[in-house]
Image (cartoon, rainbow, N blue to C red; front, side):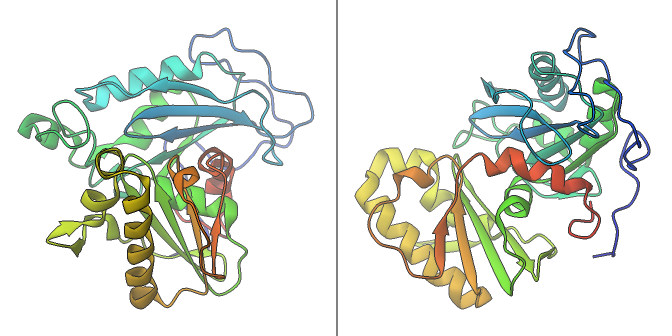
Length: 284
């Protein structure tokens, strides 16, 4: 982790002193609020839905969150098109942040477990999609399409940036279509680890045991017990000081949790987008 983030794909990451509205994806977006500083289009890319809003310099949403379903098959060009369509429904922006459900390094996609499948999470992989997504320069592609400098990170990393306290070792776990994790130490993002793809129980990964399809099949009660078992394993792996549970399925959790576990709102997946431009915390 470097002390400051490198230049973003598609342009200079330094905020302008007097931010002016940048046309949206279709050239008709509403101007950003004057005096609000650089406006950030924050995209939360999920295996089930694509969500986005525009944030002012303080992280306040300038528009209600927009959501569209993720459809399959989903090669890179289609995802970029779908995100551009979503952006066209939002106010103007000066820069872009995106959380992606896979391993991302310096704007390149190293893994895309949802998007390499034929018909969505849980279906067979398509070798052509695996090849298409391998090291796909998503940050560059979005920057070129949306006309604004862009940064992309793992979606759990982005969500965590919005909720961590900056004290000790903090683990973020997102529960949704699949499972995501992020680690922060004294507020700084640690190198991303794909715990979701690691064996958890009965030869299955965390993703395979805790994802949305499994929750629907086994029911909330059994799923809740599995989540608690997963937290016990992650506690043994990381010795976290605090764990935050987020994602679209966090609201299915019931019953008391350990004192060092906190449930956070799913909106953090968007609100954390502005932190991608904070070089003191995230280097992407």
